[in-house]
Length: 446
Ligand code: GAP
Image (spheres, rainbow, N blue to C red):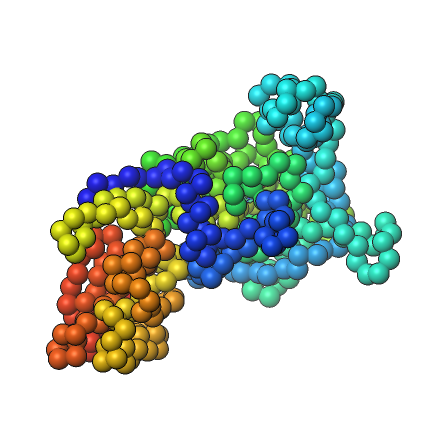
């Protein structure tokens, strides 16, 4: 098969996402809200699968991790102590002619990229969204939508420590929404103002931090490649000193080669003891750890792997997108689009398809579908589809990344067997219905 590997054209990806129900523009019937996106029926499955895969790898499969789900709204003093009120800002410039706004640090030249006009002096623009708690809009009622989930972990450090009796090193993981009033957004779901992050704050003894920083860099990178992302399209880049966030001693970015170039999909920062120290002195509550060996109280250092869910989704989709010439039943070829997603991520794991809507085939196909769906052995969605020709249904399932199709045909009525068709190779194998569930789950986890 002649195959066109990614990178896929961004427009093609956006169009597939809309056509097949992965991602829709938010508030579309009102003309949309810039850079805001909704996940459709397949997008929500893909997103859940990404988060589940991450949680399984970094929480459930490890002895040194626990989870947390902190509130989005936090006491405003959290953001003063963390340095976000003062320092979480980007340099904003405005074009004096067309009034478009830009991030000065992202401009190659000091003129408006849209019209070439003169730009204003830069001013620091804080990226946190402000809101008010309660019915009165006054300074005392200001609250912020969190720009990272990390602070929920830091302020719960003592709660986690005392409730779980953890010893260093240990980590706390959290997945949740974050909000940033980005000056410039774009590239589909890559840079938006509302997004989701999967974060770990991993607490270590001071002095062990650099070794753990390297270990987390490698483990995070492996997570993407284990889920099928092409190693050649991933790279790790260390931050230059002038790029470092206000809390970081050193940071690695994992970047993916997107259609528009390299883009950060995950950061792994060495946050030192910056946050625990800051909250200890601002709150008056000591966030220290008693070291049984040295009988000393120490403030742990923190390694923070922080990955965007939406950027991970964009990476998996971009990397999985393939166009190829495929043989047809009549002996010719046709172009097919395939999402070669890892089975753990695929929104639909198995599709059960009767060859046609024939009244003898449909009841058996429905019976097979129910058997597979209710078995509990397939971790994820099983779909039944009997609309349009079998060829078109295969193409549709290929385009949404379904790893396995099960076809019920007229022979099935006599031999109690069905055909499993594999997405990537298009190979077909006949299996008895009695052995179907085991065959499917074996192939999905192989
Ligand atoms: N707590 C650390 C932290 O927030 P970050 O590098 O600013 O670090 C972490 O963000 C990850 O969140 C990024 O690597 C990226 O994947 C994702 N992310 C950040 N800003 C985003 C945005 N505006 N839209 C979508 N994802 C974003």
